[in-house]
Length: 192
Image (cartoon, rainbow, N blue to C red):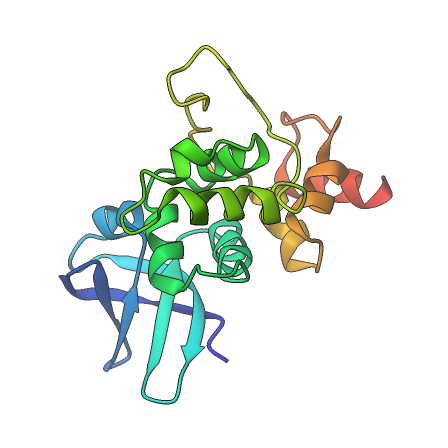
């Protein structure tokens, strides 16, 4: 399996980014946010999911490990394929999407292209207990979801790389100061 791809952005089209890695171009389908942030000629790293079917092989890429893990959870839901999962992740930052699922906000999920009400409800029912508790929730906003956390949580991603699922990693980091370095936060979470 291809775990990640690191190289320069050679081309962009239809939410796909071609990443040149030492002369080999990998076509990677990305969520809208990652597509928009990819700049021609600049170096990028995508955590990838290699999807193999009878007729094709596709690479789906994400700028954070947390987004990749959420994508992997989304495609376990009946009726949600890779394209629908990308559309859901394209709604906003992965933390915003995770919060929507954790808060059973199917209305937010239905805003994704090609995702109907029943599929969105299935997503929140199947995954709300798997994505962990919301980090911040404000029921006064129109979507039920607050503004996304501006940065990815590297400590959360590190714990997930060590084999924790999103829920367990979130719980392990509860009460650990965000003022500490990523390494210290991970160490504190592991000591638990």
